[in-house]
Length: 295
Image (cartoon, rainbow, N blue to C red; front, side, top):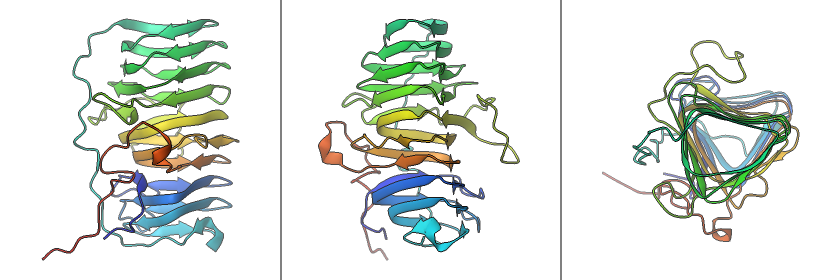
């Protein structure tokens, strides 16, 4: 049985302590949808210190950790049934022939075309980059936006493939991206290759013991439009900023291995699906599983 609310955040890790974690002054604001942790650990969902997780409903397949009652609104349900990855059937690109090698844009204004960016894509030194509509494959290297640079694009999907293919949006970056409204990755903004090739994180984060999934970081203080679905089935997403994130998006959905919010970000997961032509992938958003009886 489900709450009847659309699913906007699913943490897939089945065993980790803190599959979804908020700490210090972090905020997760998802008033019209459901937040769900698949971890059966007694600490499968964590909100501590002065962090606040606010959603239409909150559910953990295991337990939950809190420092005070105000860490959650409403209080999470526990021992919920595990939800299978609703996007596991989505197929990614199959052609990985390099169009670019070790692309670096520094101190420039540029428009980039879809293609395969082998060795990663670095945007730095106050560059202003626009992505044309289509699918961008970042292979065997990171996607990094830093040094006061900006990255924007409408109807784009970013697919990460191979060793080192993680993303970092640094504190001083400006990010404004929307997912495709049609095509094979309609509704998908970021897609981490489900084979989950291990990779060193950029920048390094070693605050969780043991082997981590591939790490992606949204640290930007100006990432207010992230319209679409962030699908990182083998990735850990770190969100750490001082200003709202994705609050100007009609909707944002996250299906990730793990999610960590640090210090002071306020991550908005809006659910105004009718305000955009960009579709929500089947299985999340308003297409979540219905309540059924079976024998």
